[in-house]
Amino acid sequence: MRTNLDFSPLFRSSIGFDRMLNALEAASRIETIDNWPPYDIVKSGEDEYHVAMAVAGFSQDELTITQEQNMLFVSGQKANAEDVQYLHRGIAGRSFQRRFELADHVKVVGAGLVNGLLTIDLKREIPEALKPREIEIRTDMALPNADMKQIESDKRAA
Image (cartoon, rainbow, N blue to C red; front, top):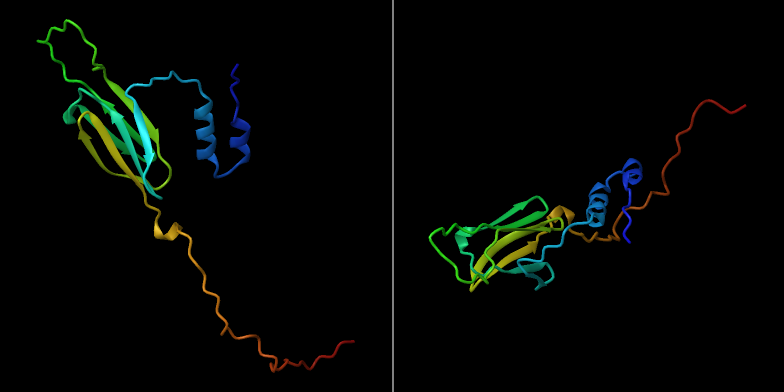
């Protein structure tokens, strides 16, 4: 049994967490599971990833890869071959659209199609302003001078 959670009270009382709450809300929705085309996601380095999709029967012209903000869309639209008469059709040639949610600062750096396997190369590139930086600890900083003179006033306390 699955219960739908209502995140609206959290939206009213939190600031800056809207992306996380949207992700939780999207994950809690019941969606139809379409497992075609099959794919693998591989982490090949500290900040490098590859998505490999089995798209047998699709040519390079029939596939489209689009990145919009933090979403990666891969779609395939088979060209109509109206003059072909199939006696048996076992190779799936239906249209598809697969979407992947990307983390912040993940960019598509390349894609290739070899032997029916579409490979999309991704890399996380964190801007210099957001990278951790080390703060130098100095020992030559001047301490407050103990020989400072006090300013005196003509007024005396009663």
